Image 1 (cartoon, rainbow, N blue to C red):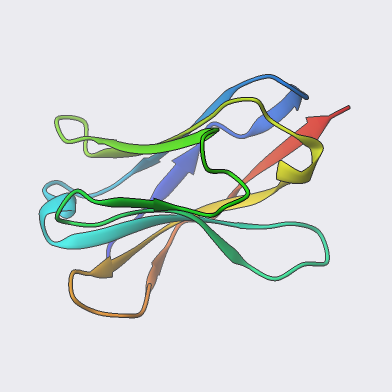
Image 2 (image 1 turned 45 degrees about the vertical axis):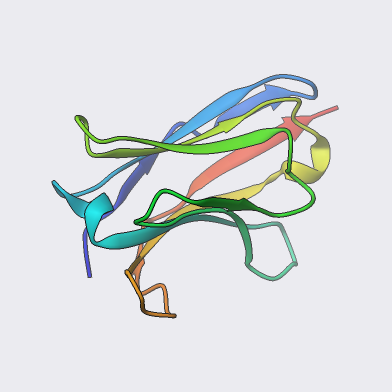
Length: 118
């Protein structure tokens, strides 16, 4: 497990943009797979975007083309750039990590709330 600290949530108008950040211990990205998850009110947790230790990415169909997951290795920070936001994107967003090659995400941030208004 590694310590993850999230920031960047807030209130934004539909069509706007927001960038979430997740700070990690040094050199995390070489040995861990990273992911952004979200949970909307009354709904199940879902994977939004993933970033593997090998550099590959994947996205939920609902955000593909609008969201981008990336890392800044010098700052040990994971980002989620969210563009063209919709009201359906309203949720608490979490960053998470797992050991490369392992199937379970067992390190989680505290969550940051994103609210998209119409």
